[in-house]
Image (cartoon, rainbow, N blue to C red; front, side, top):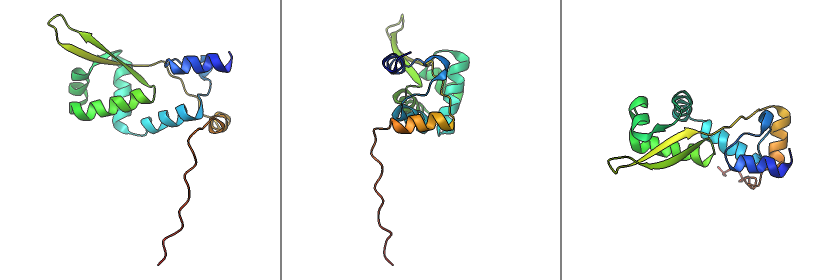
Length: 131
């Protein structure tokens, strides 16, 4: 699989075959999104249920909808979940979420490859405050 094909799959939320390493920025976004127990629980529930509506997820997780929505948006920006709007028969707009097909393999080699693809600048170090 070429790099362009792999990037195309990653842009559409699909895992490259064999869990190939994503680019550094995508891996960093995913790891940042996963560094929260609420988001891990959300992903676990979505994996078990398939797709789920925000209201149902809020009830199942015993979480307020605003907080849940914030976590879902963070997962969506990282490419770990997708959402779709539907119109119910009664005319109400329903928003559902589902996990995407991601498969990250983390090893020293994959981290080195991902680090080589980072586009974010390194943070500048600040001098220590004087006493």
